[in-house]
Length: 414
Image 1 (tube, rainbow, N blue to C red):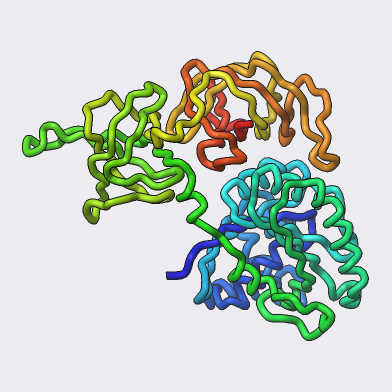
Image 2: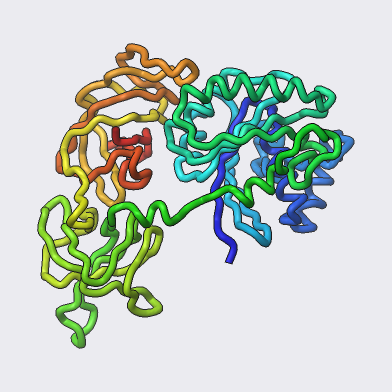
């Protein structure tokens, strides 16, 4: 079975993100005939003298009419080597929140640059967000090389500019690829028009890039309880199981676990699935856990490895991306949803706002739409949190408006 790579695309307006994804879908033979025919008709209706593969991803009518991408569109395709989930995020500065949404679960960020324009503010913004969100891999896709005559020096200069900026970020792996997505140069197949480039085509790199699910399995066990299963028959009146998905680490039968936030301890008696019992469950697996002792465990509690307990706290610092039109201000009351637990909270302090293009904090008395800033939150009841830098699941949370129930922010525990 092919493994899975999640990647998010980002870049400035008209850098060619939708065209690139359309080319990946088309050249990897992941487009149905009726889809292609529809795109061909729409291209003709728009007056294009070519099949506009960007229309394969710009599926919303508003996008087609305006020629822009206005939301995060998720696309799926696969090759014999690997399956892919693509988050096509918009390039406009006012859609920073969409980039955060798309990249929050990504294994790789694909940042596009127009070869004619080079590294611009949006390039730096998207690289900074990728670093902030701890995306393990980044690809700098220098697109539209055909419009600069496939000039090697132009490509080298862009890579040097980006590398100089990336050196200030905590980006563990950066790879650059020159391409012309409109004609497919270096997208799926290596281009003969850039003989000076001896690296892989984009799809080759995406198939080969190392994505280790084992990393999550090696971390201390974390199991947020989603649902409590109580006795449903007289045959097993004492049955009590805790259903959920292993967020990190590995749970094994016999492991010592601590229930948070209560701090009570027990051992894993059984791990059950629809297909039967398991000796162990790893990060990403949905299971029902049965404990050896009768404890008061509820939805929102977390079972954790007793030898590596996370911080249990009612006050913590965090970086928040604000996603609402109404600004976030100190003293504001909100709801915080962390894994399966939702609690009331108050913004105790707003420390600063981050200028993501300059990587510098600046004073602020509020966070407005798409702003990113450092805050201190106090919760009405304790949460079991890990730093986001250590765990992208138990270190993340969303902020919810108390009155409307809408998501207004996304946060990362400091």
